[in-house]
Image (cartoon, rainbow, N blue to C red; front, side, top):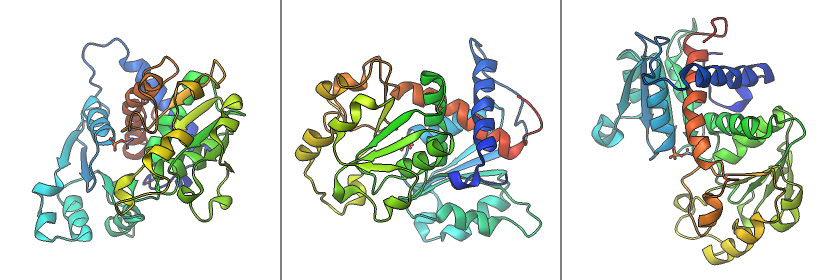
Length: 313
Ligand code: CP
């Protein structure tokens, strides 16, 4: 595996191998005062984020540093992108400046794929490109950390029913999770307003519903999505109030979930609209576990791409 651009790049063995490696990293670092492994000493990891991020960018930086890589965060506003440099020239420049891995977030779907094409030579050399979110297309490491969290909380994914709720239309998290969780044996149900369901969703490996109340009693997990106002040109239908009433996960709805079910959100959350304040902070919520797991999963992804599958952590 050279790059991680889409969940489609992963076989079931690849995906479970990454989750198992993440678990080994978590165990290797548990209880340590000094969290530093020599795994990526001498390797250079660059993050290039054309869209804002807290969780993904920071956890990739922490993951690289815990494995002793040199991590360089390319600040787009302080880079030559502000002088009009193209994505291609920026990617080629970072490649030739020494990147072993390029971790890229960009508002355009397909941008990570383009970068991989530009920076990979005919003999396969060039940096590993990791898609950290491309437009409304995919966010594969988010899906991997969500699968890891579900496995940790529910003991496995086979036969589990995961209800993904909200703005599916603009959500790269929803697409990557639908692909990965179904690949790993879960049953995925998408629920949201018809106006926020993508055309072609019937070709996804999911079922689609429009009533959240109807889906909650049989759910093993409910994953609330962020409403991506920045991709809606100034307005969305239904209104924020209608959305909250019909699709918000409030205390009344949380009580409809089975006791063992977990509540997920990739963050950042819009509390009070997508998810109630007390629901986000409840014992059923995995929101902060998802953040912590994101570091170990991203360590496993960097390990797999830069070291390979033969060596064990
Ligand atoms: N979940 C997620 O991608 O969060 P950030 O935008 O903060 O990275």
